[in-house]
Structures are given as C-alpha cells and as structure tokens.
Image (cartoon, rainbow, N blue to C red; front, side, top):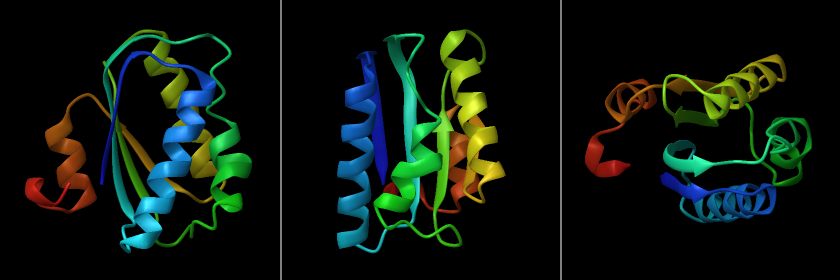
Length: 117
C-alpha cells in the first residue's frame, strides 16, 4: 500500500494518515507499506515521528514481525533528518522500517511488484 504525503504536513495529518493506512491495511491483509514524502514542501520541527513506533503502532494492533515500511524522502534536509530518526526509533523497537532516496529501491526492498504498491 502506498501513502503519499505532499505539501506542508502536520503532526495531526501524519497520525491521521497512519491510522487510516493501518485500518485499510488490516482490512485487506496488507503488511507492506510505501510512504512517499518526496513532495513534502515543509514540516514543523515538532513533527513527532517518535510517537508512531513508541505508541501508535501498538495501539493500532500492528504486528512487529509482519509490518514492513519503506519511506522515500529527499536525500538531505530537515525531513530526511526527522525520518532517519524515525527509522532508528522503529528499529530500536523491533519495527522493520527503511528510508530511501527513490521509490524504485523502496519497492524492491518491500519485495512487491510496482502494480501491487
């Protein structure tokens, strides 16, 4: 499943999109997600990626051994720094997350055909 973020993103939008994707994924037995943030133009410094792996994923009933998230963001900048921290926080809690600079390697890592994402 692909979730695309664009424009200015807020903490509430990030959490709402995560909740919607998790519910949709659970309804369709999806465990591999591609989050594309290449079109994000701005984000607040207080955008709290830490809350996702620390509490929200468990609250949503996601399974650590099944979930796989590939995140695509530009190779540098504040968003990249935040998402790199998110990756570390996820890995430290047992969530399988990896950050990429482009969609194609993320899709390959997720192990799905481009038509399935």
